[in-house]
Length: 304
Ligand code: NAP
Image (tube, rainbow, N blue to C red; front, side, top):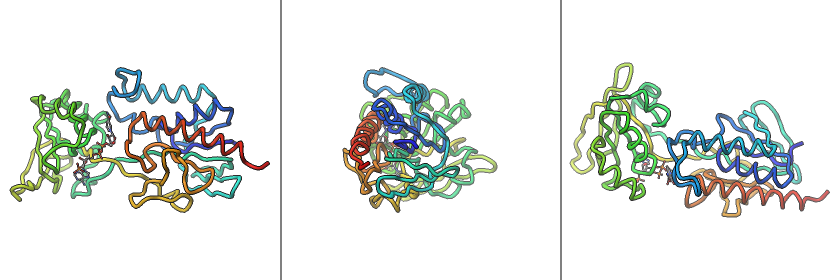
């Protein structure tokens, strides 16, 4: 039996494994896709303390090697539900049922979809959710990036090194990204900001050829010819497997404070999956440490 099961092998989960293992717990990480989480789709990270600049995949690999080095086990399985029977919890996956003393849910969040016509049809044929993964397919071509947050602006800057032109489409008349990113975008000749526009439809034959935008200020529709549409409009939690076990807020995030304690004893939530103000790698890693520490205390206080 594992002492601690950690669901998700992103920065929160892998940090939890480091802290859990170092405290002497047998830790199992369960991950449904690749370790590293959203970090792997980020080209460069330059706001993780003490690391001036690092590729996303490299940070993910460092986190993974560190956790495995301390003795954590990583299994690639999709978690379907958790049953909390008091002192013992059962984590049911698509392959196994594991009994454990404590659980940390650190499954992150996924990229939100636009929900416009053509998005699903051209997904993988011009529509992408990851500039770092797919940008190189559009060398010397035109790309549209949708969104006004850090991800959209970072991706537009990343694509400006590959594409001949990048349209940055946002529904408001100003970006919400951090100032240094907005300044860099404004100085970049290859990026054309298109503010106060909402996407209406993505068109093409076989692959993306254009996108139709609604100009909110004029009320008119505009057609932008493009080879790619990168959708960077934020995150959505994916906690449907846990809704019967822990309380979720109206947006689907697990309700847990800075102590990572959920409504279900012995089940903790860490990183982007929980209600929190700032979703960053550093806050996810911090959550992992806090949740693991809380799990250790919880396990130590269990009645024999
Ligand atoms: P975000 O900050 O939530 O921004 C999402 C953007 O998409 C917003 O501008 C939003 O518009 C727009 N949007 C949402 N739904 C839309 C829709 N249906 N149609 C059109 N536009 C839509 O998301 P994010 O940029 O992915 O960032 C997520 C989190 O990761 C944030 O906390 C961010 O700070 C963090 N992050 C940090 C870094 C870094 O520090 N280097 C890098 C990437 C991400 P409104 O502005 O109108 O709401």
